[in-house]
Image (cartoon, helix red, strand yellow):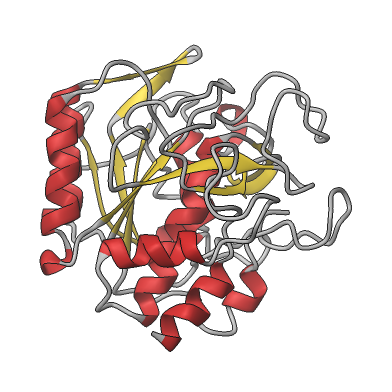
Length: 312
């Protein structure tokens, strides 16, 4: 539904306009997107062809493989760049940097600030990532991590800047969760199939979570019942290599990261700030004109951003 929503359920066009975007590009393999999460199944057949670098900063080894049932990062990676026709990512032509930084213990996220800061530096400096996709957050801000984000933004891509994409949070609070509350990053909330901000009472019928809103929210993207890559066997959310039940601002964030990678594929000369401005400036209105605390600048439209990028 996130790539192409025919309106069953929902409304026609409540998607990221993937098929139109692919008439321009499916992504350049020179553009690398890092997924910082609970690990990525880099042996997954839909993801393995895209892999160019991986590392585990939680356990300190060279493999980003998840532990136990940690399927979250694998699902995020699939939304960005899955290369299989049955479940295709928004930017299937770009390359994957897989980075394990922490894990989900029950409903909470656990990661060490020193390791996260080191991981961010490694992603842009050593692995050459142009975009960092961060579907995690919460807890008190860390100066170490904030400084690492600033280094990525200002020094990545030879000084043009690595773009930082962060999830808004799923508590339906009127505030972004850290690090999505920081400046000069792209913070993403979740919309549903009816082009509404996902709430506990929105028409999708899921009552256990809602997308955060408020100051710092930049963009919305689909985040309800997204089909993507999954761990195989009992460790995954569903049998087989895919799931259709990935939810949250965690799902919305990689759509925006993928769209940024598509823009950089056609315009590698743009700064990260210019790419952010294109994505927000070409978003589809979800009712209000301009920026609104409920939906930011509106829902991501990858095709409109690409078209505007080529015309700059």
